[in-house]
Image (cartoon, rainbow, N blue to C red; front, side, top):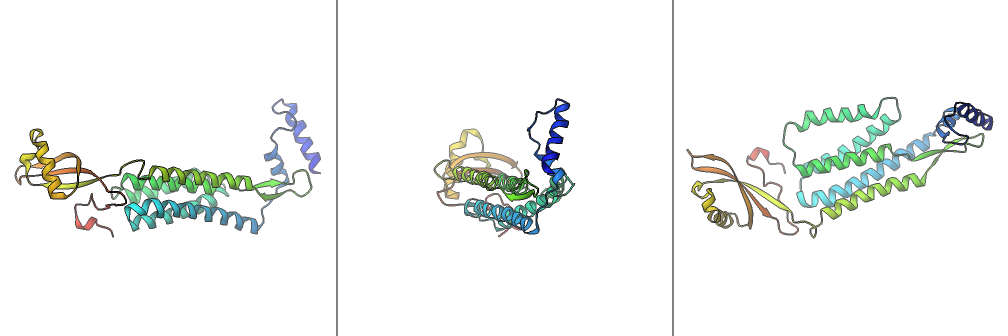
Length: 263
């Protein structure tokens, strides 16, 4: 029966000159045969996707992000956001609702939440990476239709597809590992300073300004930027750039108010 249907589709398409016999008719045959995934296969597919995504996300967040930032709030956000994104994409990918609507929902959630505070560029980069990985792990093909030449077409686990999906995750982890390595780039940190000697902010006294900041802050100052100057209070906001020693981090450099501090 399957062979007859297969030949019928070939002849019908060839009569219009669109496709030659034997060309990419997998989708047509799959639609005709209506191969169905079993419950066990659906559970296994979700388990593979969820476990791989959770493992890769944990490696990125725990060994690369949290190691330097020590921000437990973003640790929680990245892990939960990635898992929720994957499950939503997986469910939406199996219904008629498009992936665009899914991403749109997360865009709305992002605007509602993240517009209330400035998210540092490093945190935004990691957020984008875990969203991209969740999309790959949630939508990449894992099972394929087998047995098309028989009377019992069925879904079978495609280890090649799983391998490609795992390779994509491994490449992203390797890229982050290289870019986060201390030997590749020095990590520049910044401090916001309310400086009280505004007579030193003029270009002619730049060396005196750097020397005074280094003495009072205890760091090797690489560069400074002069911000708002208040002549009534004889104070100026200065952004100080310096290099962090190897293995050290400072996640409160940009905080100027006690209520902004998050443990």
